[in-house]
Length: 112
Image (cartoon, rainbow, N blue to C red; front, side, top):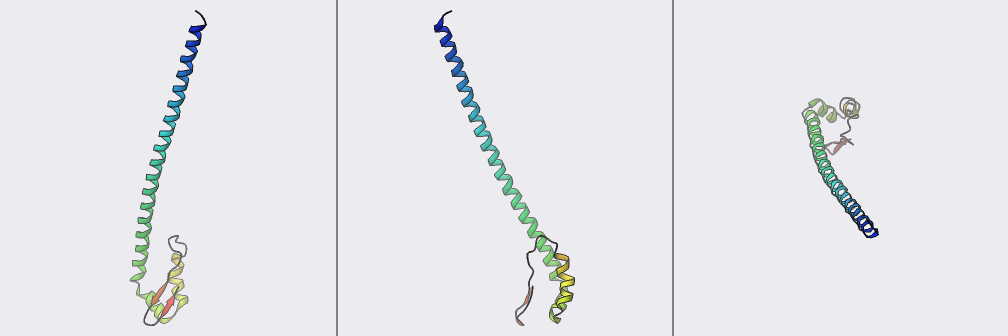
């Protein structure tokens, strides 16, 4: 065997290594792209589910307090201390509320 065979064999080995490197890079590129697409889809689903859960929880709180006539009596009487103790205290630790406002248009009264 002479130099031409060694040179040809070295060329084939280098070519195989280059093809293998390109294939590996392409596989990683497409794998990461697929992972990112799956992560985006999962994020969308989690966000949609959390919005639905928050809306349902707030709906529950609003319905619970919306039909509670004692709170309306406190509001109509202007008894803000009793209103705060009975209504604000239970929901102050609830992460779903930034603020709560009670308003009555004809009398232009607002409690928040």
